[in-house]
Length: 352
Image 1: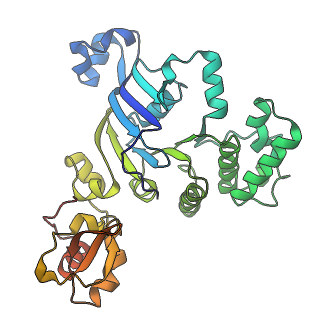
Image 2: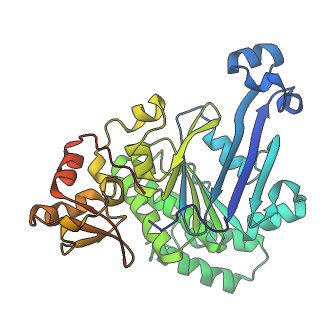
Image 3: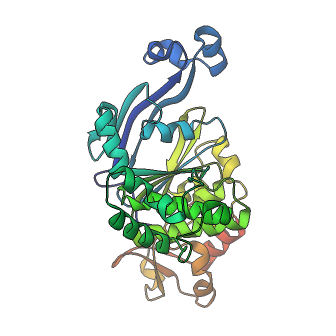
């Protein structure tokens, strides 16, 4: 994963976003009706709030995961970000430009050049070869055949489909078809890639492979990614930062270790209850302040090292492990703390 840390100038800034479906769409936001439970609001107005006053930033080059169960609003949210669905209120800024104010021509330009989407349903053209499917957005953009095919071949190779450029979609497995979708999304060299539960229909082993593929591609091309999922394991594997949604609003936002180590409420706690904490929490989470008695000559690890990765070193030394932020010592962690984390014991330490 990247070092996205929620600081700096965001690539995407979402401020006070609402989406209301129904006849009273533009009469609810800012009124007492906006606070009604869903059933009461529907009975009174015939409308439903799908996105409720949502705000967050997505930093350049990070994988930002939006997670929630069915009906939480996550897929509606990503469609609002790209205006496949028109938001009711709020701002969606791409590098400071309010996408909601873009006219039709500007919106088409943004979709062709600045961002791309990967859906659960591949949407491949069955009568076109892989190379022509990947090159299709470049064709729409008006690029000549030679240049768009050259770009498409490079993307086909990048996603691990070398040798399949002349195949047709029905000759490929589901995982391979989704790779074609990834290549097509990458072909336009977008600034931001949106993924709407792209692997939900795949078999578990293929799904795991595709998650690893996304991480590999992210490391190679460094795109900002917004990833929608209902699967906690997928969110924890991919996300630099994660937001959990429920009934259209954000319940908690933070790094994976924030959600696992300090769930905001019982709803989040139920999500993360069975997660092995040592596989998610970092040394930053369990470290304590260093004292002169610690000696400070023990082994060292970066602060974002996952606890389980330091187990073998902790077991081989009696000295506290130094936790580093670059060249700066920010704390220490000893064998007891690491073993407690692995055992799932509660620890009073908190991240700095």
